[in-house]
Amino acid sequence: MLKSTINHSQRQLGMVLNTWGGKRKGAGRKPRVPGRVPHLHRPALASRFPVHVTLRVDQSLPDLRDEGLSWQVEQCLRLGKGGERFRLVHYCIQTHHLHLIVEATNAEELTAGIRGLCIRVARRLNRILRRQGRVFVDRYFARILRTPREVRNSICYVLLNCRHHAAQHGRKLLPNWMDDCSSGRFFDGWRGGLNPPADEQPTVAAPGTWLLSTGWRRWGLLRIDEIPGPAP
Image (cartoon, rainbow, N blue to C red; front, side, top):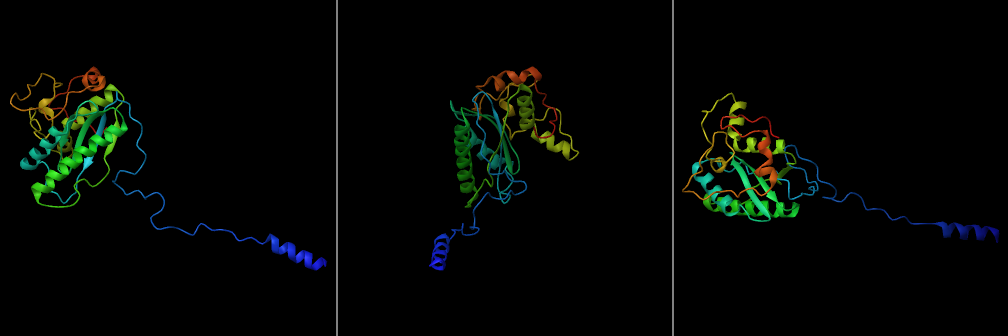
């Protein structure tokens, strides 16, 4: 009788453990690829802070600074420069990437504004080049600018990006040279002044934040021959 009771208890204690089933293909955080923007949660954005955005395009595309292509990209930027919730204030077009300085009421409006610009540019370039497929190859990189000095450094880096790259390769550009593939011709913060083209509609919106309109000037106006330092 005792033996039977013990066996019965042992049977009652027997348990079948559920397992998690092993590693599932595609599960978990994606590995970081060098040179790519990691898929991390984007921080909250206050409307008083401008943002420096970098957009990279597929290397198979022709040089975006080609006169015909840069004009097409600028038409898209002009149409998508925004209004109250999103504003494109400064930009430069490089061979396979774009630098933008924008304003947005929050992180969601920033994403929506950048997405709208990317869709507009991608559709036009694919149509002009008679191609299909992606144009922008990565998530946009965004850096929130919180101080007047950060803003000045970023404006300098964006509008004078060609001088930065020329200096890296040991080349020197003419002191009065202005990059036609940037919004520098519409910028009112050059030392000595510069008259914007009277016969051309601006490709950018006027700044709405204190930092982009006034605050950055505390660190001095920009020189057209100024050479920016490393990326802010």
